[in-house]
Length: 96
Length: 319
Ligand SMILES: [Fe+2]
Ligand SMILES: [Fe+2]
Image (cartoon, rainbow over all chains, first blue to last red; front, side, top):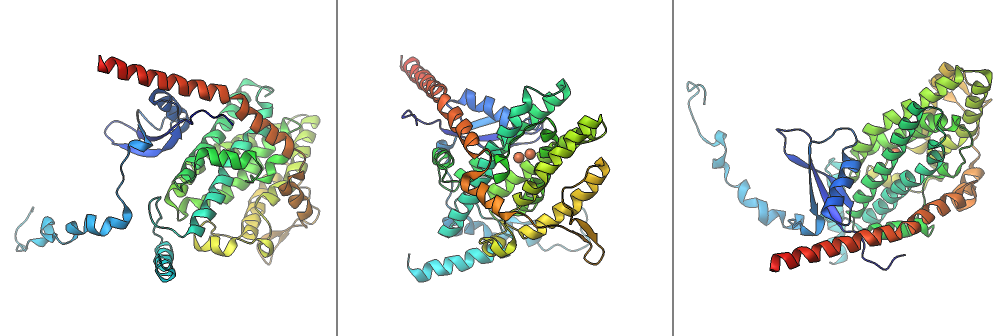
């Protein structure tokens, strides 16, 4: 095996058509961003699945820890007043 | 973590899966879950990669341009399948290099079917029809398996498999309706690929060690024997349509069960091939390891180029 550095891992995001957001498709290895783009085209868009590709080196992604989901997302759960159903209105009010 | 805490976490974990929740890479998971998934997903990835070799053998000798582009596209898809699966596997904390190392050293297995030779063009038909056909039966239930990245990779794989099987069946159809020699060639390919395809669905339930746990984790939704029966039931009418004979004198429709009865599978042969004594085990590994070694300078050069470019960018920013 070669003692040189291994190709880093890249995360691949593809916009399937204009009007839609880029979505995570998977990952692949490439020596640089340009190669990651070309490889992503071959690996993830062989059947016109995309019109635009983003590549991001995986090591640049900071992810939240699911074990801390409690603290992180709990504040949203007790703010029911952020939802329309929190407000009591008479049935006669239409279009609201 | 104390033993009790782990046990508690495990219970919560199993309950999540039972509720059909997905497990994602950063979620806590039992070590056994991680190990089992690394083993299964990597084995699956290796099978896709090694699976390119028997068909790659015929790309340069395809009988027409139409057949050639189709076979080329199919083999390229298999490379893609391998890459989707390797990347799913890496989310479990194992590196691509370790995975390759396991394949190349023989520590990891791949599907035994790819250790059979492809001696005629008809084998391209039989592989697409039978081998991809059996693979589809294995893979469709995995689209709803519990590990998120694996399930997502399988959805993509399954979408692409149907073209593989159809192009194979079309090759068989053409040969079966051709000259007597061509039909003979198709029959010969069916004769050679039928039994290995049945074996491909795995050992009988009685001998399968992983089934119960795999069912719980949705790595399996039907047993090997159920999948095999499903494969036989759907393939026999297709063989009839081709006007070819399945090489099993005991094969016959059972009115009572609503399934085909079939003859004994030669499991000794299966285990021989799994243990490395199939007709092409050595050849496949030599081809794979050889390609990896011969490509080393390209990988190194690309990396050196990338580093040089990066350094140059830094210098020009600084000035
Ligand atoms: Fe495949
Ligand atoms: Fe396939």
